Length: 240
Image (cartoon, rainbow, N blue to C red; front, side, top):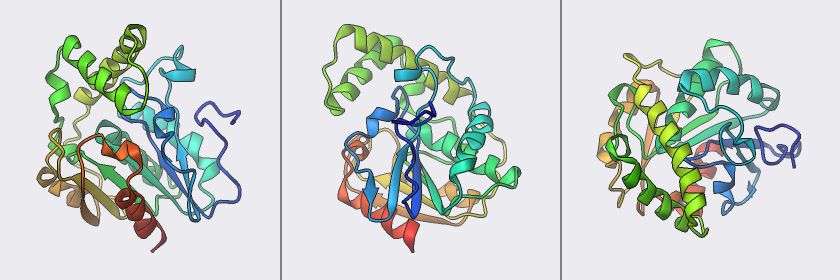
């Protein structure tokens, strides 16, 4: 366990590389429970955001910019070795914004930014969730809880819906007119069965930095299962 509320567990002093993983919209850091803690020398470090799970009583961020402002200060003591940042769909955008803020403040920048199932920031906002009613989002929450191996009890669905709605509204507010080009490389991960974000729409990430594009097999939620091709991409792109 970690005394820092931003982590479920304290990052290991023994890891050679750290991969900070932001939770998917509507979720907390425990969504990464199916992922290994280590991929060789790479440590998977789930980040816990306010407004969910053990931080439910805290206010959620209403902009990705404000989230990045605070997150870089939290991460700074742990940037003493190579690191990456990962985000899927809505969480890819605050991942990018965090990398931007690290650059602007003169802090260490990622060895690699991983963005999964998300179009580039200046092409958005984009996605089916942005137009959904609460009833439709509740159906997605039901599916998400099942994908995570949980039981979608009505009280849990209602709670998760509140978090997801707040995250969706934050996504709607984010639309930088011109992207900041990062000095670190980007890996843009698409999924060949993804009906939420067509991987062919992700090309503009090249405007944000030197970008490697990878298309992995599976639907939108497959990343939660820690599939081998995703884990291999982390290992290849973070340790090369």
